[in-house]
Length: 150
Length: 213
Image (cartoon, rainbow over all chains, first blue to last red):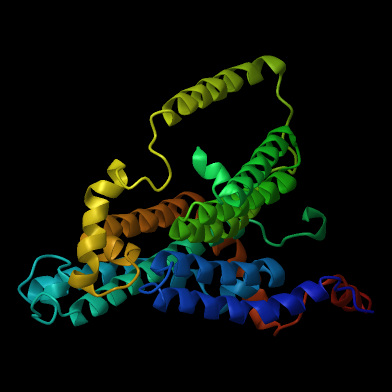
């Protein structure tokens, strides 16, 4: 007999998690043209993993996205953001001056696009890593979510 | 006020409706004892306030509120709720008096402050006339990015955003250092499960394992 009475929840979550992740990347790369950007996309990616953890259990989520990966991701995100600033410094501009990335005159926007894409990537990694680290710190303290908790 | 009868009546109605839902949700949260219901209602509160931000044309704020307030903080609060009991203890009447006075005083101060606020979308308000107007005028030429919020956050205030990213990183680090990294209590369990394959430890398999013994 099948005692798993969360089967509908699991099936729906399995269908939704890829869509949520896709939407996060849409938000990430569409931030130049509409509302959104790295911060929102990072939170949405974190929520996709957390939904997986809530439905399939924290150990399963920790196998898929290990805690050591999430906290490294948070640090790497800050480093990417700061790295874009140092890249501008190495090109002879001020810190985070995207116009200096490719030595462009005012009015050309390649450096602005690449620079903002870079820092948004840093924000995405930093935010999603930090949020998942926080979630694991809370959720990792209870071994399993019992049915009567809902 | 003439705009109320000038075709914007529907917008006013939507504002009143959304703010009434917010008020009702806040009262319900204050009166409830079940922590699970409170967490869910605060998620609804965030979602409704996100809808209200859309109604006042703050789309980026609305998006952030929906993602962080309704999505993220709800699940983090659920995780925190699992560590404690499921219901809040009722307080003595005397202890409720202080918070009530603080709320009333803050509310009165805020209502008093709204008298001086410029109207929504007023072109001569300080927010729209000063640096905000400059951004709208120069952002497209200088950065070539259509959504003006993105160059303001990324180009003009890149240091602020770097600081915010560091704040988020520091918050994650602080929680991880205070509560442990989370995998400690689970490390043994994951190792055991890995040793015995992907076997599920639900009641059925546990019972069938114990029967021969």
